[in-house]
Every structure is written in C-alpha cells, then in structure tokens.
Length: 178
Image (cartoon, rainbow, N blue to C red; front, top):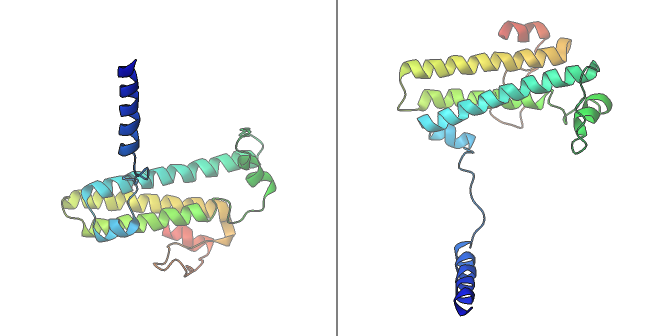
C-alpha cells in the first residue's frame, strides 16, 4: 500500500514538473515571410502541398455552393448550419469564399514563386516544375473567380501591401490572363 502511494505521488510529481508549458508551436505552419526570406526545399514542399489544399478548397466551395443554389445538394449538419445559411440566406459578401479564398490562394502562390527563385538545393528542372505548378493553380483560381463573378471581373494578382487594392479587370481580361 505504501509502495502504491509512493508510485502515485511520484507519477503526479513527474507529470506536474514535465508539463510546465503547454503551448506547442505548430511546426507544420511556416510563415510567408520565412518562406520568402529563408526558403528550404522542405518548406517549399510544404507550401506546395498547401497550394494543392487551397485548390481543393476552391473547387469544393464552388461546386458545393452551386449545387446548393440549384437545390441539388444540402449539407444538413446540425453543428454547422452555415453551409445552407451562407449560400441561401446570407448576402454574398466577405463571409463567403467568393472573394477571399481566391485572393488567399493567389497570395500564397506568389510567395511560393518568390521562394522558388531564391531557394538553394533544388535543380533548375525542379524549380521550373514548381513554377509551372504554381501558374497552373493561379490560372485555376482566376477561372473560379471568373465563374463566380462573371461580368463583374476581378483582379489577376494581389498587391504586396495588404492594405492596397488590386485593380479590377473585366471578365475578358481575366480570361485572357487564364
């Protein structure tokens, strides 16, 4: 009985002394500044995977909202009603993915392209393949933006300063860029 108490007290003591700081950094989340200023092949690989995730997100949001508008699909998750309320009740605005998601994708692509020019440790063929991949995803983001906004057009790039607005081009000009 005394041994059990000693083991329990030692276990509690070890647990309390080992867990002084419960904040653990997210090692998978690289900053855009670090990617551009200090790129490594591993950070470029992680960023490229993030671009692919962004492209899937654009496609999922686009097809899901179109199917909801056409009354062909409903996501009836009681814990997440926004998939219906945003698409059918709320006005199209900043809470929807129709502007923010393509902008974020283009901004991330620009960061990866800048890093591809500065990274050491990858061959020219690998850097060119990464550039081609980025430009393909950029065109896809512009295409999705044009499909959602139609004749309203849209920007084809994001400025370096997040407070600055990009010029809005016509639908034909955006398609020409695609």
